[in-house]
Image (cartoon, rainbow, N blue to C red):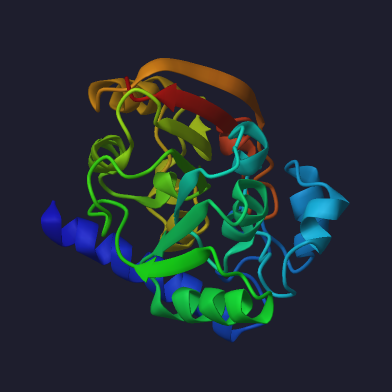
Length: 261
């Protein structure tokens, strides 16, 4: 199991490193984690406004999201925000604008190329309240009880140990007020084996997706309370693979909130 988990992380890391180095998507298909080469168009479709897209440095929005967690996070001035799987910094920069100079945003990503890109974007945009740390979301390089809000966009589904991700999220959030706000992909029904076991599907955020009920159960088991589904919608996968009839309507884009009491 451990060997399989490490293999999954390796192929995901390699896929997203490729996304930075190339102009195309993070996998060999034209559709990956909600993203195409038309990042702005995809970001509009998953809930970002033109104003938000235009407010960040060029190159920060890679179009890999499946929702807009910042929109549901109800960020406040002075909040300390943690972005799980921060990529090139898109959501981190949007969060930084909301929390202001008295707030702080920490982005975590396991791909060195993504961290380098995000830091370059932060310098380009003169963000003083954002930092990026290399690390895995199953073992966060963050102190206990130090975060007000955790956001994540189409990343937790990539983890081979989602239960540990939510336990780590619970650990670092402040007791009594810490909030979890995520956009992610879950399954409404089982995927065909050839898709679920595909490397391309995993990098494309499909192979690692689990049933919605199991996803919610893992959040609850980590200790979270007041778990709410903010919204959910079917997610188009037609562009990723051939012969997808059996997978149609299997993938659901979901927004979830939860509280650490």
